[in-house]
Image (cartoon, rainbow, N blue to C red; front, side, top):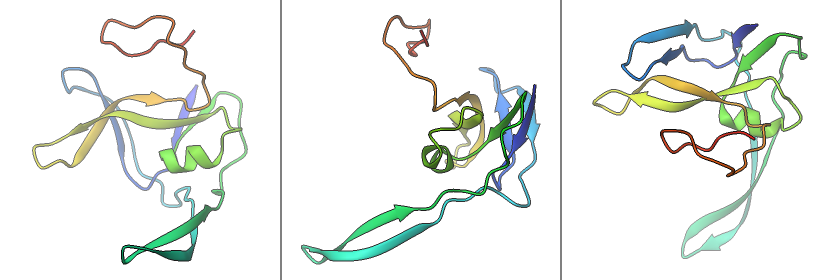
Length: 124
C-alpha cells in the first residue's frame, strides 16, 4: 500500500509519545473544494448565506493507493473509499497543528457495538 498527500501541508503521524512514525510532504497541487456563496438575508444585522461546494480535482482511484485529503474534500466525495483524513491532531503550546495520531476513513460506517481501550468507537 502507498499513501499520497493531496493537502498543501506536510502531514506527520506521531505515536502516543509524540515520536514521528511517518511524514508526507505537502502537495504542490493540492485537492481543493471551492465554495459559491449567495446572500439570502440578514439575521440581526448578520449576513445569512447559502453555500454550495464544488467537487475537488482528485486522481482516479488506484488499487493499493490511499490519498490524504482534508475533511472538506472527503465530505465532497462520499463515494470515494480511498480518502484518508488526518485525525486526533497534535498541537504545540501555541495551538499550531504539528501532527496527527491517526487517519479517519470517512466512508466507513461506525457502530457503537463496543469501545476500544481509550473510549474510541470500534468498527464492526
